[in-house]
Image 1 (tube, rainbow, N blue to C red):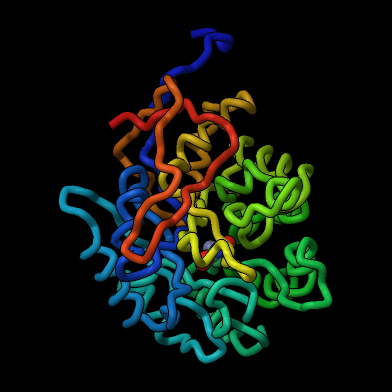
Image 2: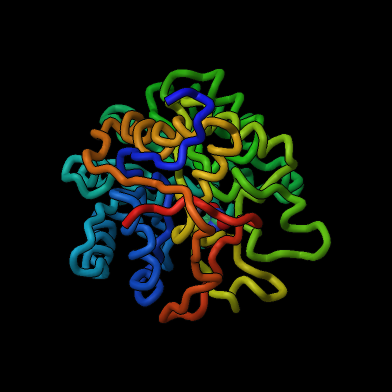
Length: 351
Ligand code: DOR
Ligand code: ZN
């Protein structure tokens, strides 16, 4: 096939989602099938109420996820532990050794949804970070400072200077994943630091910029954290995602909140992208002329960084009539609006 022949069918290894919020209870039951339909594995965020802090809590949460998985579906949740200033290095090491937890999640206290128990003083978690470096357990980082004096659009770039650089200097062998990066600054930082550093990029940050949230009316369904930035940053994210550079991979950060929780005077942060993520991504990669790089981003780079084998199964994306996906889904917890990319989606995941 010549390079000019348009691709209308693409078979790739089954993708994984390296950053996913499944919640718990009725919400978990309603949203899990959308991820399990397309993804083999996912890194599961621990920001429940109360958070998933210990190995025992992570094992319990994993059991609840597996119990919520519909018959006939296969899905492997890769659990994370929510780091607090009291996290015990021995418990973390046990969770890793016993295969209960794949990574630890670092939320600066107050940075986002349910992050109140996160870390204020990074020196207090030094022993945990050193233990993780020793055993090769990755740290997933929500990279935003919480200092109210810092403009919300600058919080990621400031985090790199104030927090991430010092941590990497003190614990250079720690394997870090900067999650849901939203800026050229973060892309450059990852590119310039080849050792022990990678980044996930969400579907929605490849599509929306801050105008999507604020121009011509406020659109709460596009509000997430880190908040989408200027168009030049979105372009930098797309370039990183389609580049094939193994340090960039998909973490959807699909984060369901009910419509009443989003549509209020102080609405929650999060975009629910699980139902149409792969169709959205295929459009983004096609528009960039890089469809063939989709597999690296969704299915190869993540496992390589996490030192796991890529999935053996494949999925096939087929281009056709616009994909019909629900505007919102009804969950036991209430209606949840599905991410609207703002353009029609033509790539179907073949059943
Ligand atoms: O938009 C977001 N939603 N960003 C986060 O960091 C947390 C997430 C959530 O849990 O809702
Ligand atoms: Zn998240």
